[in-house]
Length: 200
Image 1 (cartoon, rainbow, N blue to C red):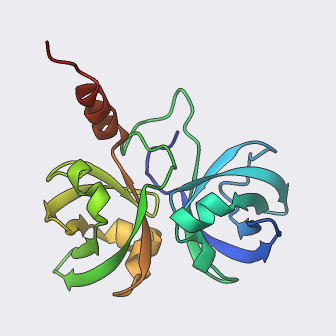
Image 2: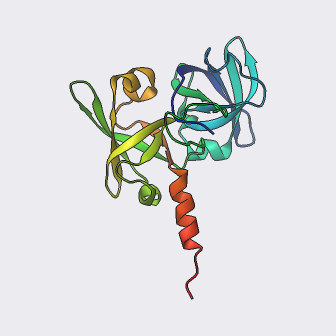
């Protein structure tokens, strides 16, 4: 479990095809590797990955085909910057919202609107996720917990403060760039519970 508060911008060292529909990702991140051990979870652009090795500030993780297909991790290359967050602990401040690190779909940047002190970004929204996204609700974009400003049938917008623009990959995203989306898991549970109710 994560909170969607990015701890640092990491740098991809390599993404290596491991055969059998999988890959091995190596990422440099001195903050998240400072106490990382084999088996720990680290969110990489919103995808929960398991540490298999940690040497000199670089951790490696296996990425299964399912994760490559359902996220934008497959387009990473050496030098790419990524949002990193260690898994939450019992005493963690919940500054964002409950984030699983299970990507629900991939959207793309469709517009950027600079303002005086902040910026509005609009992202495409896969149709199957639209019902879970509401104005003033929470959504995770590339591992960043954000509040939805406006939502339509196929897009949503968020406002990014200077800190978010500077300290996450969202500050450097261009129109057309893919982003990993995770909707609020509570919405999915509510839908399932209501769908399981029987009348009569």
